[in-house]
Image 1 (cartoon, rainbow, N blue to C red):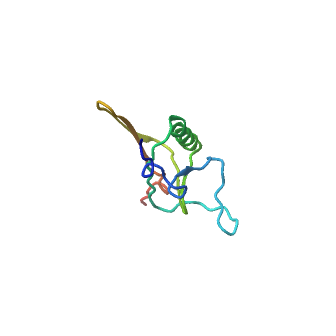
Image 2 (image 1 turned 90 degrees about the vertical axis):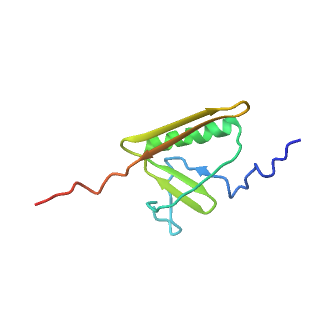
Image 3 (image 1 turned 135 degrees about the vertical axis):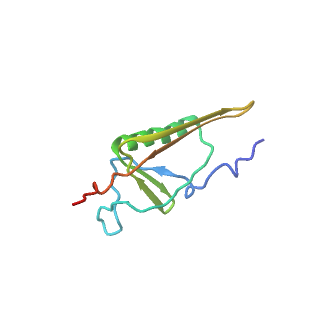
Length: 116
């Protein structure tokens, strides 16, 4: 019998990918632009359907220009746009296969440099 105690994450450790149409509100009810820096990390064993749900949410967010990640009390909002860098890695061993993706992009600059 396999012990899933370490594999299962508590609800606070789980990561949520918000619907791109969902507005983020501050505690006083104002719309909050989430332009803060930070990192979130998540790893868990999921069913294929659960993993696909995360990927579909990410695709929707990227298409909509906003990916909001929530983990417990932490929130990180990303604004994917413009040209992206895609890195794909795949590996296969006798009893394990792995596929990983990394997407990156630069945020638009505040404007072009003008010299007079």
